[in-house]
Amino acid sequence: MKRITVKMEVNGKEVEREIDPRMLLATFVRDELKLTGTHIGCDTTNCGACTLLLDGKAVKSCTVLAASASGKKVITIEGISKNGTMHPIQKAFVEKHGLQCGFCTPGMIMTSYWLLGKGKKLSREEIRKYLSGNLCRCTGYQGIVDSVEYAAELMESEKAKEKARNR
Ligand code: FES
Ligand code: FES
Image 1: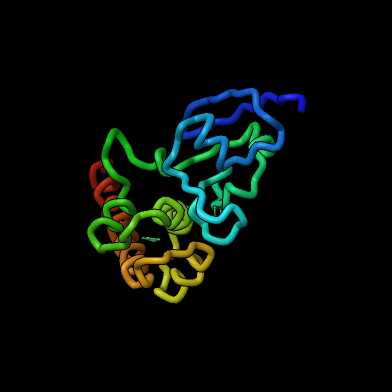
Image 2: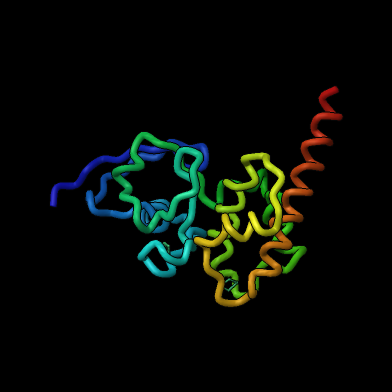
């Protein structure tokens, strides 16, 4: 099959590759860009392990063609830490035991990143609802919801500190 050229911004860097037009975005970031933090669990849009942000929206990259992401902005789990410092959501998952085997964790964190980026105060029920497309076989979800709640607090306090610094 004729290969095609795709160009996109991934974690703030422009990338360009010649690929099979049937290549999925999950495969593209893992195999072409070696960003293996994006996991592939089911390949059928069920588990959410492959979640990343495409033009600001959380998507399951196992059912998005890499070609359709051309010209867009992608953020993967590797793109949310800054200068080697974990993002508050990552810190919260560590501190509140939001993971066990860790397979679902990049997807959970990327969905939470999108969710908390809305800046709305969320109830535990709402957090559960928004994370319902991300499956975890280990934690029983309690620790995950605790982590997302705690991440919202951390992000809020970081924002307040930033504001105070800029006064
Ligand atoms: S690997 Fe994409 S939803 Fe499971
Ligand atoms: S921590 Fe193992 S699947 Fe979620």
